[in-house]
Structure formats: structure tokens, C-alpha cells
Image 1: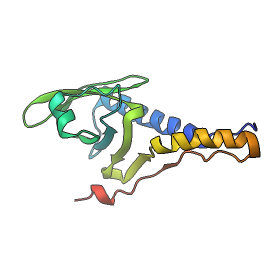
Image 2: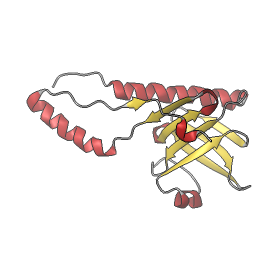
Image 3: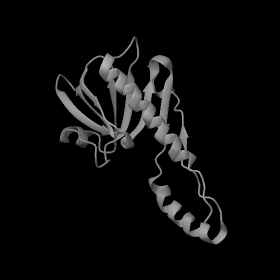
Length: 153
């Protein structure tokens, strides 16, 4: 089988590193100016830790806003934890970077979206088997910038 460069996974890793750097800076110095974040994540990810009532309310994905009221923002190489206010009830959340689907800072019209390819993973296995036969390269995972229109008010 021919060796290939997996640009999709390399781009995802770089984009997650960018999010990590931004959140580390905010954890140390607070949010500068009008910056704030909409972060959508996969609530079914095995390492996501959220309250049961939140998981029931958001069984597949959830978008949180880091803006006016947040505390205990801690960032690791694997993800971040933060306490957010839900109806005057502080709730801790643990979100691995692998669970993040979108990261948007509307104040500067910046956004990232991570494509999920759960159904493509089975296809990738089949393509890998086919590759052994015909040397067709596997389809790369996509990474793209998200449109901010859906976050505008």
C-alpha cells in the first residue's frame, strides 16, 4: 500500500491546538475586549462530563457560550473544563478537544468546524481493503472554516 499524507487529520490537530492556545490565554488573562466563544460539542463523546439533566436535554450535541459568566476554566492537552451558569445554577463541564464540533468567535468573525465522519470510518476500512487491490488513495478527512451566519442575531 502506498504511503500518503493525511492532511485532514493534520489540519484537525492544528486547529485543536489553536483552540487550546486561545483557551489557555483566556484562562490566564480573561477574555479581551468583545471576544467571546460559541463552542458546539458532541455530548455522546465518552470523555464529555456534564450534568445528567444537560445530557438529557442535549442528547447529541450542545453549544455553550463563554462570555460574561464563566469560571474555573482549566485547559489541558486533551481538552478543557469550565463552570458555566445555567439559569443561576453553576454547572461544571469537561469537554475533550476531540468532542468539539465548532468553535466560533463572532466578535472577529472567526470560526472552525470539525467534520465528523463516523459513517465514513466504515467506508475508510473498505477503502483500505480496496487500496490493497487497486492503489486508490483513501478519501481525506475534511476540515473547513464555518460560516458565522447561523450565530448572528
